[in-house]
Structures are given as C-alpha cells and as structure tokens.
Length: 112
Length: 157
Image (cartoon, rainbow over all chains, first blue to last red; front, side, top):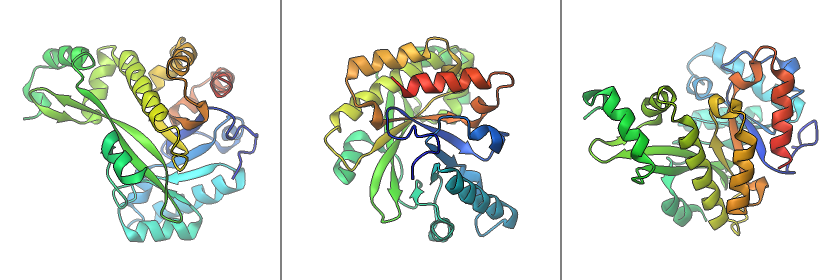
C-alpha cells in the first residue's frame, strides 16, 4: 500500500501511535505526510468483548485502507483478536501473541 | 521494591545518571505480517535501575518529563536504535525499526538538527527508521502547517 501523497519509502517513515484515542479529524489526516497508523491497544483489547470498540476498529481499518495508509495493530494478545483483525483487512501486528520485547541480541538470534 | 519507595528527587537524580551508567536499554518487539513473518520492530526503552531493577517507561517517562530529561533521553534512544539499525542493515527482512518520539521532542526546535546529526553519525539508510508520533501532535491548535512542514523536512533528510 502506498501513501496517498506519495511520500512512502523515500526516507524516514512516520507512524501515528495510539491511533483512535485522540481527536484528529479525518479531513486533517489526509494533509499529513504519514506512512502508517497504529491502532491503539485499547481497541484491540476489546475485540470480542465490547461491541462498540470493535466497530471502531472496523472503521479505522476501512478508513486507513481507503486513504492509503499502512496499518498496524498493537497489543495483539489472542488468536481471536488476530483473526478478527485479519478478517477486517489489517495485515500487520505486534503484541504478546507473537512475542514480547527482546534485547537486541535475542531479537537478532530469533528473527534475523 | 517499587520506585515510590525511593524519594522522587532521588529517582530524578538516578535517572539523570542512568545514561552514563548504561542503565537504559533498548528492547525490540517484532512486527509480524499476514504470513507470520517478522518485517520490522518497535524499539521500547527499559531502565534497569542498579538497586530497584527494571522500571517501566510508564513510571519513568513522566519523571523524565518533569525533570527536563526527555530531550537527552530521547537523543540517547534515537542514537542507540540507529546504531542497532546499522548493525542490522544487511538483514533485508527487517524493513524498519520504529522509535517513539514524545511530543516534547517533536516540538523541540532542534529536533530536525538532532535527527540530521544522528543520521550523519550512524550512516544508516533513513528508510529503515520509523518515527512513532503521538496523535496529539496532529491536533495542536493553530500549528497544523508548522507540523506538516516539520514532518516534510524530516522525511526529506
């Protein structure tokens, strides 16, 4: 997925952390040279628990997709959350379901 | 033992020297794609206090903010992560490493220079660095144009 404004992959990338918890308007979002939105853990936590929140996640995913932002979900802890996110079209994940933060050497040994 | 057990002043002082004593450590959490492959990482800071042990960023970042230590700590983290990116530069499956930038850091007038300096020191491919900004940065009233300009400048470094 390439950003709408064509900034993608030229240099330093910008991601918006904890997305969905602030008050940024969608109209504004388009004008920022952002590559990625990171769905806040609080929304992921409530998948399968709180119906209102998973409506928010669905909406964020659909919007990010339409606007050409990459999307990542943080705080993924269960298979149910992963499946839901995948179904809705989110394709990058981070969280204890996969692994905890590791020291550089361990990370290197395990993943590189 | 919990940080509360030490006096606030003592903790601030300890944090001031944490960089010199090598007590700050960057941890890396993998980011995984739809096929289950690692494609990137987020760097997360830990403080290993010499007496208390590990202290979570949720406890020490507010302390750092109050003590005016966010900028030096932010500098240290950015440089440490860029050095690591350099070590991993031939690992092509690792597309980027993300670093958290506080709004204090982003707003700091010398922030662009800081990044420039660290890129020059570490000689990394800037594409491998991802900055995670808080949503609050986008909603600074009356600052939208300035924020967009700063972001563009950073992306062109």
